[in-house]
Image (tube, rainbow, N blue to C red; front, side, top):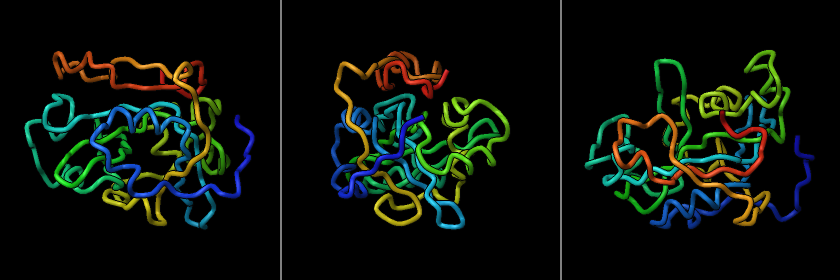
Length: 206
């Protein structure tokens, strides 16, 4: 587990961070950032992002917005970058995504795994008895541990309900890239190296 050491100057990522049209670059830059979702008492629950997947909008067969698809479910993908897109999958799990790019550029990045930093007791209560390395090592797992539901869909990442902060930086040699998981339906796009993770991190999904 990471020691909790915060710099006095640490602050929320600004809107500009999310507005680039180079979603893969934003995805790589998300590694090492701190995801913060305060609990009901206001206590910080946070984790360092260790694994992400980029989804590239209308031209990406794996994206919910492929072909310009626009529904009530994915409408927030068409908002400007810096908003939260939460969807429900397999009738069981919520998935947390960060919307990127300007308005009407429906790209998003799935947060696949984080390493707990603050509020791990809250995560344990929400997830039940298990190894700590299993608490947040997958998108459905981290959503439960952080209390993420559809109520956060559309939330502004520069607001006070959920946000990202600067935390750690990693050189390129410590970052791996490969195909995304569970999207065989996407044909050739399933092979795109749009999943990024920290080498050797125990919280990367299995």
